[in-house]
Amino acid sequence: MNCFGSASHVCCALALAVSCQLLVASAESADEIPASQTNTIDRAEVDSLIQQLGSAKRTTRTQAEKSLQSFGPALLELLPPLDLVRNVAARQAVRRIRIQLEGEAARQSLKPRRVTLQGSYSIADLATKLAEQTGNPLRFADSNAEDETTLPMVTVDWQDVTFWEAMLLLEEKGWFARFDSQSGDLQLSRTATLPMSVTSNREAVRIRVSPLSRKAISDEAVLLQTRVSIECEPRLRPLFLNYASDDLSLKLGTKSASSFDAGAKIELPLGISGREAVFQPRFPADPNANTAHLLGEVTLLLAAAEQPIEFSRLGEATGVARRRGGVTVVVSSVLLGEKDGRHSARVRIQVSYDLGANAFESHQTWVFHNRVWLAASDDGGKARRVAPKSFDTLFQNETGVGIEYVFSDLDQSPARMSFVYLAPTQLIRVPVKLDISGLPIVNDAD
Image (tube, rainbow, N blue to C red; front, side, top):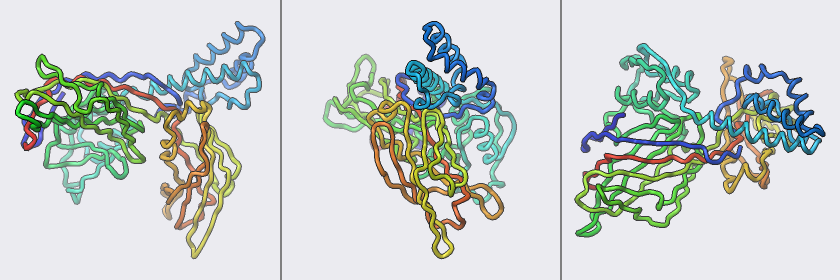
């Protein structure tokens, strides 16, 4: 475990114990169920078992439910919509099975992705291989280099390391992975300035912590403040960071300091491109302290298991419904236009969730940040994505929303393009425990 300081700070070692535990799951995980897994399930057997869920015999119903659950998350693609299950007992059982399997899929998605790679690579090729092995989008973006071929090769020898451990090993070689504030992409770049204190855990979450800055507030007390950054693997999508200031504390030797902002409850939305959750706790303390131990817990709300829902031939998609996991998307109308050789499309959709109000909880705005695009191709036949220029909310209730997306200034007709809606179907609360010792304290002016 390594720690780096800026030019004015002394390098330090941080001991971090972070545990991420699933507390609440209300809708789907970050990975699609591989088609190969789904194809190994006998659809006729599934249909027969679903019929048995409505049997008059309790033992038959119970055994059928257990058999269906044993297929695991791969079964989700084959479960019928609840409104098509006419038998009440069968419909309730399908609901229970879906909730259990989606929770299992969500827990699986929170396990860290691992990398095994040896050899020497250009940084761009290395980013590509990392993305291929982990499913985590990663790209090379070094504004200081005009020609990538002039950059030195990067030699790695990784055996089953986690994604964030790989990022930490790259930092030791001078390459830094940071989320772009505009696009939300994780980018590898070089910088002449070493980052502030950095550490990572062995889960799907990375935590970066700066030294505590010390500012005098009286002759007998100082205010200590640090910057804590929590980042999920790029394939995961954090929506909100929640914490209560009273849940954080600072140990200074044998003494303990409570938060300066006592009683505060903080919720930080991460927005459409947000990938990094940052908070800056403050603690009043003894001015003679040199190191500290940060303790506490914060909670991330994640949108898990994003799955693409595709409507081919947009011009023929009106009235078509598509379903992935527990989410259903219906294209209610498509209005195509053309003016001066430029094309446009207004696409209205309805998005609904099997789990009703539980899928949205108290946060409904996240659904408007789901990614949407038209799948097009350029003159050379290369696939590309066209994002909407804007969107409008048509309606919003406890089970779903209606949205209109506007695509404009297109160089080709969207009638034959595919409309793709990327839908998470589960919200997961992930508590992240902090136990950080040996945290240095520096003067505010340093």
